[in-house]
Image (cartoon, rainbow, N blue to C red; front, side):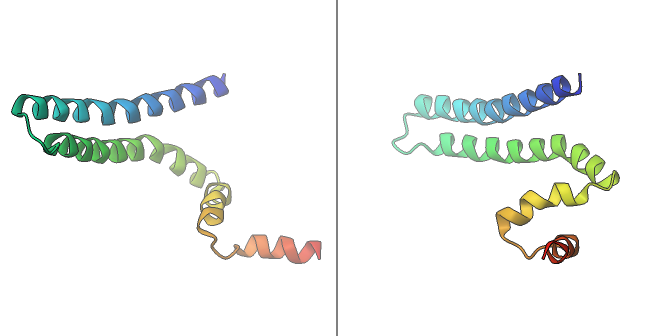
Length: 102
């Protein structure tokens, strides 16, 4: 049951991303066609507004999950992918595990 809830949340975030980008960009495209501009000014403005709305909305949706993971003591599990992505130095726990294995 919990997997189904997680899949539902992921689908909601995916649709939110798609619609928050498509709707303002489409409105901007419509304004550009009405004004018959050579440069797609309103389309780019719509894309910028949609991107801003999308980033803020996804942050608001994901923040409770990150706080819950940190509250349960799973901070290492949350931060590990970010550390790998940014190639940061390993944490103290990772260093101790590596030394124990040697």
